[in-house]
Image 1 (spheres, rainbow, N blue to C red):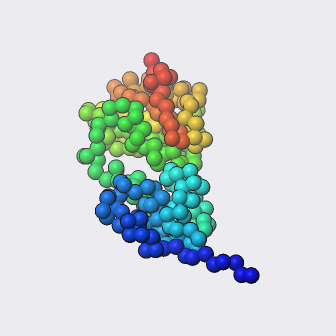
Image 2 (tube, helix red, strand yellow):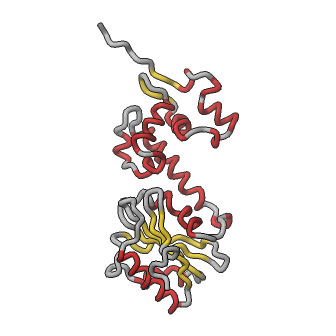
Image 3 (tube, one colour):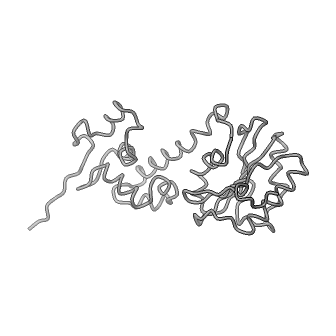
Length: 234
């Protein structure tokens, strides 16, 4: 006996009130689940699985949107029902979401807390596979002027050149900086080297009359403020 052939699910096969595109048009994108938004990108599902179900499967496998963001392109391509075109659409949509807050610097709110600074970079930096050290340059109103990458690799006191941390801040005449680096392991607990680097940066900032407001460590879904913990700040 031949196995029953499962149907190929299309969004058009759903009742109109259940179709993601129609729901987006009538209720707005904020009303849709992540799986439904992915389904709009996919357009069709696979045999026995709707586009929404495929979207949910991807979210479950990779651990949500942040996991899809971190996933290597090849691994996404190899998922059942995707291929290069659909994987490209998903990656492109996530990247557009990442770039949106960076599009209009004049519209950004001032950084008033460690949480504000973490929110600015966590989406991207939590997905990095190596340690990156970046510096947020702030004006006198604590508004973001620019975020610059200073170093890529293991963040430790023997390798990080403190002068490089302040190079762009001085060039842009910044009033203050926030130092941020990520832990690819996902655990943002500061290491002894993190504390040593922080102490050296804070001391250099005082000599340059350039305030170091904080040093954040970004993990997976979590972050730590060394200043709040009193690590490296006198």
